[in-house]
Image (cartoon, rainbow, N blue to C red; front, side, top):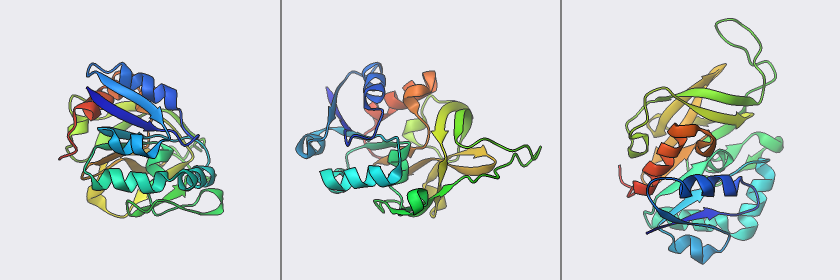
Length: 216
């Protein structure tokens, strides 16, 4: 049976993620843990995240999560990052007056801004971006299997990822501006939305993750 470590660094909706993984048709032994050896020994790893980036990065570094994420990736094991977990992978975030992140993927995290508007109607858009929105799959990937193009997923975020490498963007969403909704490189897949809050499409993504061998 698959062992999936959901990394606990005190800054994520851990139990919602774990429950969604447990309800996927592919059976898995889901462990919420901050123990670095347990994380390294798992077959698959999930890096969740909610909250302020400065606090997230401080706790990751204090607990050694930054090191263990790199070790998991180096071993070729599948790793899924969710929401702030995805943002933490970037080089830098504008949140909290600027925070250096894990620098695993090239790019930055930027603020939507107070004057965000719908380009068609010029109507002002609320920040945070909260609710259901379509994700356009820009590149084929095993984690998109069985998920229809432009399926809707649930978002809650005030900051978005601007990726430096275009072919690492595998999903895009539009909210005033286009932004990266999903990134992928080798055995790493990251999403800005919350699959655990995204009904059938989200459960399918978790199911795909449990079946994924980390290869594309």
